[in-house]
Amino acid sequence: MSTIAVAIHDVEPATFDRCALIRDWLADHGVDRVTLLVVPAADLHPFFQRRPDLADWLLDCRDNGDAIAQQGFLRDRGRRLEFDGLDLLATRASLEAGRRLLELAGIEPRGFVAPSYAYTPALRKELGGCFDWWATLLRYVRRSDGADLAPALSLRRSPLAVRAGVLLAGRLLRLDLHPADFDHTRHVLALESVLRTSARRTAVTYDDLCPRPFAPPTGGLAALL
Image (cartoon, rainbow, N blue to C red; front, top):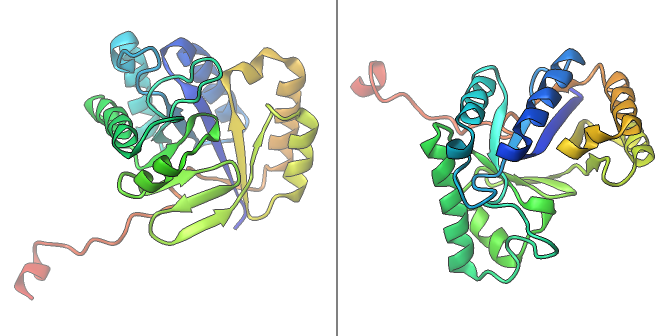
């Protein structure tokens, strides 16, 4: 089965209105499942305190089939990437703090994407203990059984590169969207072309690509065995 996994990056209070519009736009174009990458504390304040309506929207999206994943802890500032220079303990603390904020909002993130796909050795080492999956620019990684080669297509490269990438994609097509993509008419037209070309692909979330392990029942007949 050929699939398309659309991820909306940089979901936070400052971008919430734009992200909600993008989600509606995708639904209008037949994409019924997406992965929303949430920055837990972009300005060092919990996202649900800044925008309680963002937390409510995320829960509604989740209940309608979308996946909610953690994107770092706070917004990258200037040229310094979030996890640069952090040792193992500081990296673990950042991951756990972000996860805790999402859980306080009622969300259990199964996956993680580093801001700007900037992974450090410490971050890669810690992820396996925190998340079922994580995604790099080139790969989708499952903690349980390795990685799939699946380059992410992004308009940050160029609309032409995205159009070409769709034609070369394998069974899994990853498409990254950022709030700023919709500032440019040319980018929107390129995305519409991509979605038309991919109309026969089934929309999936990153959580869908990593099924939960089977848990045997604990009551009823199982309790008698």
